[in-house]
Image (cartoon, one colour):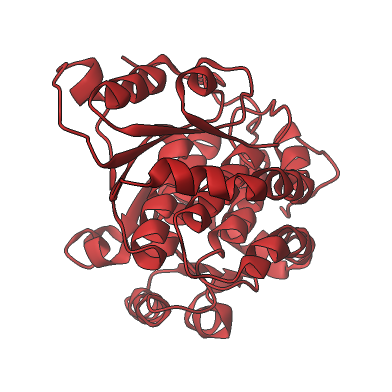
Length: 352
């Protein structure tokens, strides 16, 4: 059975809205770079506060800040604030709270805790009138518009755009034109992915397995985690998201003919060669490797591969997740599932 776009889900419609959502977000937020820079004066470390897809966006933010700004960046453990109620010296820290709705109480509470501990605060959210915006010193409000499907697509990619602007405000040494090109590249990528015969082949391969390992490294690691999350929540697949460095330390033993590997990489960068080598190791052991991005090198090493964005590594994740989103939406329909309303999930998730 082949995939079809004739029966369009809300998730697929929102995937298609991403180019315009990115254009609006980039245009709205680039003028805020100076606000970020002024707020960050006197800080040296960045602390990201998030859950779910927003946490995967934060992983991208962490790698971007460390690799292109030169600041130490870490991911917060919100339970330190909300369960342990432990005060930590956060003077000299820029706390960046990321929430699609801006209404997740745990994230709002943790950002307030960070401020009380001495941090300066930034909110990244699609909720312009949300509690998170009200509590932050600077708010980077994304322009994704309403997102009705439970699996995040355009709110996720616009968060990545906001974090790119954050990095620029912190002094990232990158070409701003690469960010401006991202929406057009996402638009092209949607078209070429759906026209690629590999999309049907990957979907058919995943339809017959109980699980998969999704792996990337560096700036692509957040994409691997996000793709694994989407496979779990929309397709009920047992998908494990791992850095390929961690995968090689033991979990690669689970990759076999019933558990394929999905490998994600930008078309350039220092982690590409390792991703290609991992694909060769997977297929050499008789298992299937499905590539997302990575250029011709990864495509040749994989069983099947979906195209990636023609963007430099630092901004490639804004497009790299898109073929994965299309794959997940098509796989859910192939399995007879509704990708818009996964079982047991709500659009806003509250945690303690």
